[in-house]
Length: 99
Figure 1 (cartoon, rainbow, N blue to C red):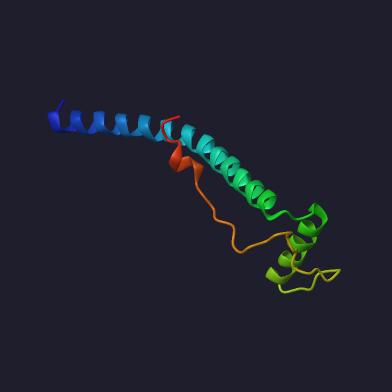
Figure 2 (figure 1 turned 90 degrees about the vertical axis):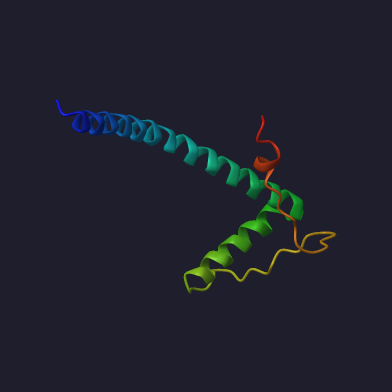
């Protein structure tokens, strides 16, 4: 067989194998991303010191505004006790890459 053809055939096989490996890895990475996003949301919620009912009202009002409707019950922006401004977000993933 032509050496160039053999080389291209081997490259196709390697590429196909790599694609299969990456396709298997992708769902795991997407789940990990979702878990990290959820952890960040929980961290922000807890640091805001907002009652769960107030937070639920805020989310409902935000969703209604996002789709252009009005919420069923007007919800005020939740007020945190001792709130001193924006909550800094830190990506723990960057700090603990060696774990």
